[in-house]
Length: 430
Ligand code: PMP
Image (cartoon, rainbow, N blue to C red; front, top):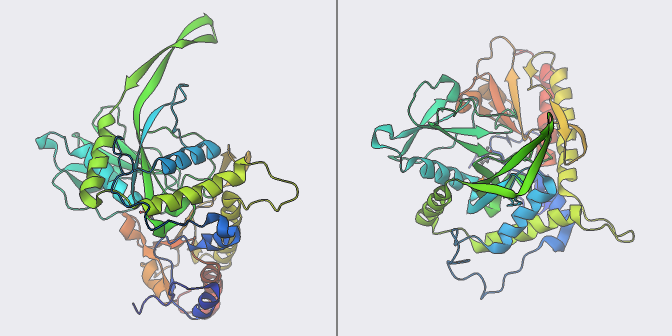
């Protein structure tokens, strides 16, 4: 492809040579190559070796609901969520619930599976069930289906029949922390929470999310997008506890008195059916690799740090440092453009994982051209050999573009340099 000047490197050396100063910078996708130096630093401890006789069967555990889910992978995922505290995944009998896990070929497949699961048994009059999301939204190209249809911006949706709302938080493209835009109190709305960026490098971990369906992906946790491993949690049931009042503000929980509020086990079953019918499961090799990778991440935070040995590198610290520095540089470049550009506002919050207040470092910049005469920011940046995705593709404003903040250092440095020097190089526009 002639438009893509940056080819995947076979080594770092090769890569540095490939990014010429005038190269096309392709920041259109959310390729997370920023994580490569971290994993080079980890070295062989993150290597997976699979003997030729292993992982041959279609099945991982034929007796389980998700029969193609590798049990070690599920354990590694549950452990990481316990370490980070970003999502409820355990049946701890403490007001949380029990969750089914479904593994998929990226969060992309699981999104399709979830929409299918929530729509396939709708009344015939309700079909195809509208799928909405508040603009600007991450638009996946929905597969054609008789069960559901893409219906655009949630804030412009007026139907009173069944619908599905995709809630992406932090949001792609603008990093906003979101809740469902539509109230589902009428019982007609079913949310899917896309939490692929709800990790401490991108945002403050403020609550342990506990939604009915949550989507995550290795692509945005560790940067292993090419491994194509995503997973969904779907709630099986919630505990309800009973309390007795002692005085005005004091309640005693009767620990042996609790009921399981049974939810839709069916959702997980239908998602499994979808992944079965579309790809007959998910690569076990990839799941084993993901297990190893996630284990390395959790170990660095959980295992005691021996005084003698160099401490194992910590992924979330690395990625946060990297993104924080990039945001500082990009904000400075935008400030230097004297009003030609603006960015989403910086937000911050107390992070329960970092135990301090942290600024959000979104995975994408939502860059706006504010200069008169520029209606199409993507076209304007294309003139500078910067490829970014135009705002209208997110149901938003064409004066905005989404820029990937997770590419390699050299690409990001060139981006910042080009934006900072715009005033000098492009006097006609500015
Ligand atoms: N959801 C969101 C919000 C994303 O940004 C992405 C990737 N860009 C995905 C889902 C899909 O990720 P993957 O298929 O790589 O797991």
